[in-house]
Length: 223
Image 1 (tube, rainbow, N blue to C red):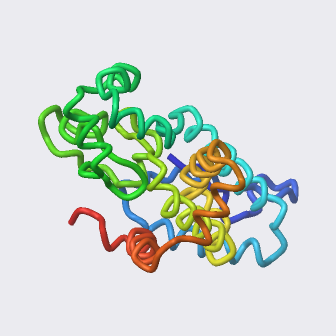
Image 2: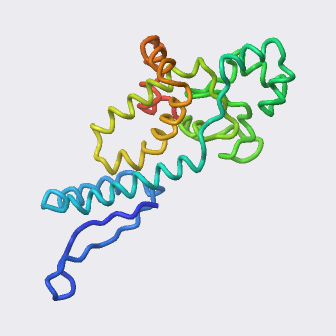
């Protein structure tokens, strides 16, 4: 639920400007939100930039706080992956996975976009026994996900594209749509370290770049 301040009007006879507070439910779709933001943008252009910045700052803070409360996907290091090949029972116990699932994980049979899914039919985003209906972006905070070293290039590419889109979208739209995932990716990349992130960025393949673009363009969403 988003609270947006729009359409100042003179309301109490005192000469003070009164603000209408709109509660926006995203289940209504983005069309109405676009109209609402357009109206607010017109007000902003008439000198209400201070109020607009307060709304954006609040949205950013809220989305980042929610994302970090959900946590960041559990990571497996290169050492973990190597140990999983030689001592799968021990690593499976550490990762709280079945050995068979761990072997499929290491074999890259469970990859999604940003991570791998260890239990597609019993995750937190859908009915038990049914395939997960959630966006792959939610893997970033899912208990069923594991991030392995080979996922890093796509994670870096998507992080960078989100930064680029921050300059292309209305600030409030970016905050509501991307601030949370951006914070989770930033936390994830910080754990990997600057050298690994730089190497992943420079070594990303054309296929990985294409995958990142298709994902952000929502070409991989379930229809």
